[in-house]
Length: 242
Image (cartoon, rainbow, N blue to C red; front, side):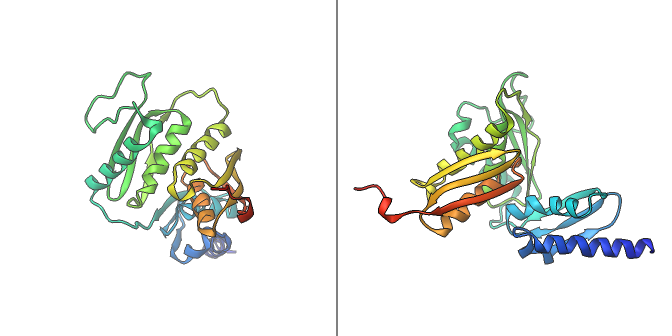
């Protein structure tokens, strides 16, 4: 079998795996594979979930290959790089988790080595995050950048402070922060648990759109590898009395 044919078969098998994935499938026609060392997986998708999973699906389909991830998110809002960086900074300042954490402008010396801080720059629609936070804070910062809906990618260069908690506790905390603060989910009974980066959502929501929002928030956290949706419809008879 020639190497060219082998590459063609590998491309076909990987594209088939991408098309079969529930998150990536709707955007699979926009994804391209370019053989090389490493291979490149590139294109534009319409959800953060698809952005997260595309390269993982490709690696599972071709475990012997190395992939460079060049998949980008289609931006819902167009902003200049300056406007994008400003929007991310505003979102970070508004988040209670980051109260008292300095927002360091580019070119300004950051705080002492043992102090938390955040820095934001943007270039060509890509947000670059720098600074020093614990794992949960690092994850929430990236999620807030994605929520601006104006970036095509987020490069998270925030260093993680030593965290005495287990990894999954920090991931679950980050998801809980997003769920608890999202206005569309106020009053909903949602429990979040994490095991090895796989999030499980349990409880009740009032309508299907709230289910979509809760699942989508999970995928904003960079450490999340899978989301198990076990949310059920709220029982109207069980709603609190006025």
